[in-house]
Length: 214
Image 1 (cartoon, rainbow, N blue to C red):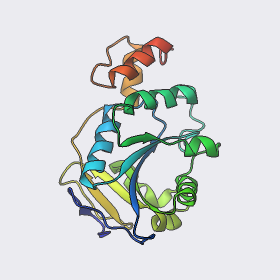
Image 2 (image 1 turned 90 degrees about the horizontal axis):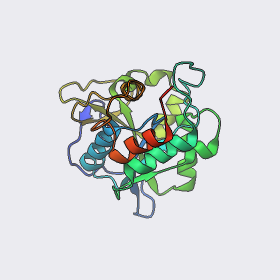
Image 3 (image 1 turned 45 degrees about the vertical axis):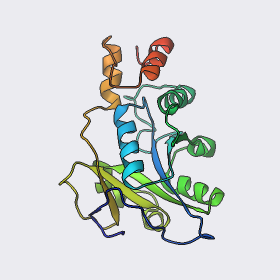
Image 4 (image 1 turned 90 degrees about the vertical axis):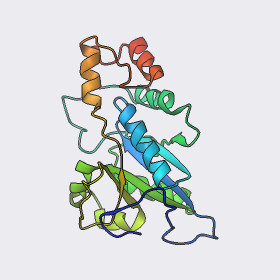
């Protein structure tokens, strides 16, 4: 199952270990969600479906480790980012907001997040969703050698673009959606529509709060 470069499609993932025979299988999509958009939702839904998971957790970063000191990312409040996630996922019963990184505080490191989750839920196998570009940077992640023993890495990419890396990756093929938070912020600043870029409720929230205008 954990052969590097393998592609799983609608296959029930078997747990690495057993816990009273009641292991749960939960996906994780973390990030700044500044803002959350249709690309995030499509990826999460595809991973949920193809790996036959129980649910997907959306975990907003408190302070992203790679963006904590950036002067170029708009300073949107944590509450606004959380509320946008709530609006985006509220009509999907197998999507859930998780506040682990927010509660931990400080810079959000994945190793600390997974450790906290597993301490609270030892009956759960976690599947960390990472983009194609992020997979290539795994060797630079904090505590990566320990992390690969604690969580399944799920790489998302277009079919035919799977690669083998030093770490075991479960590849999930997803439709190509050329949407980014950067593009969305730029469209808001230019007064352009966000239709089909973000859920309607998220677009309304951004407009109502005046987010990204400056």
